[in-house]
Image (cartoon, rainbow over all chains, first blue to last red; front, side):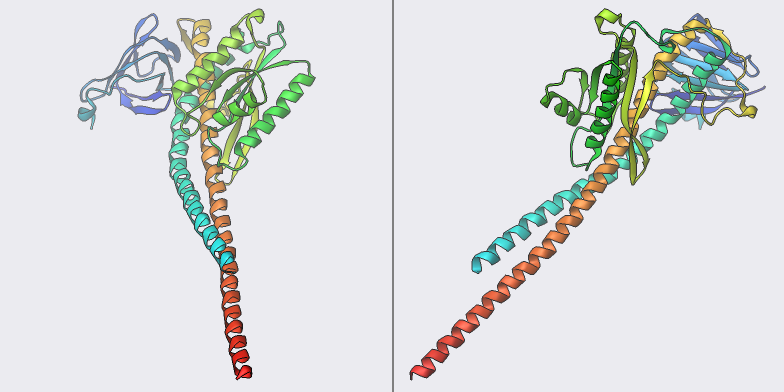
Length: 94
Length: 299
């Protein structure tokens, strides 16, 4: 399945970057799922949970408190004010 | 004569202990500067992403936003000064303050009324000592600024910019900070923060890297509303980080010079002390010899 790149960036540094099959982010109007080849989008995020579904391995989750998401040319950049928790499947990702 | 020797010895001792302190400060600054520069690098992805997003909104829509238009209803302007909390950094704070004074003078000549927002204890004491009123002050973080402090400063400035004219609203926000060019060169700079001129990312947009047409979620105006305060916050944070790195570099250099100076002084005092010792010995010998001569001629 097609994958795309994701950068998760907080104010004081890059939190995570890698490739994934699907991304779910809490946009202000409700959860928003993104797959590879999505149309370019700029969305405002509300506090909530970001889920990243990698091609293989477990889902990674972060809870964030607001920010925005931009997607273009198969690259998603999630810019958040602060990430409140470490990914729970950090060990599984390696 | 013996007195002179003792005085020189004392001076050598005190200069030596000063030299130790200078050396320690130099090493502290040197070890912190690496961290400060790392922080600058760490904050870059965020500000790059946000700048890109802001220019995307600005280029593809023509929504207007209060942050982007000039205000004409008030002639108050805000100036944010970013200086250090401590001295021992050579002319670092003095340069920033001089640049600020020049800016304030220019704005006053244009008939503007200046409201000062000051970060860093050195600048705060400079202005309070001169009885100048400060609209806002922050201190205690100048060599390691946090995003929280940057947020506080940004909120205060944005609050002033959006406030109505009769409640202390300001028409422009300027920032004076020191840009970190490299380890030996830091430069005091003035930038106009608000109203924003959305800078088309200086190096990001050549023809090959055109911004695509975005869809906005929920709508351009709301996106811009969420983006711009963050953009301002990121820029202020970037200024604080630059200033912190500059401060540490300036301190390292100043303390290095001070250490060398102390070494020079010690060398000079050692020579003087040796001379005094020699003089004392010569005198003693001549006293003994003349005493012996006198005894010999008497017998």
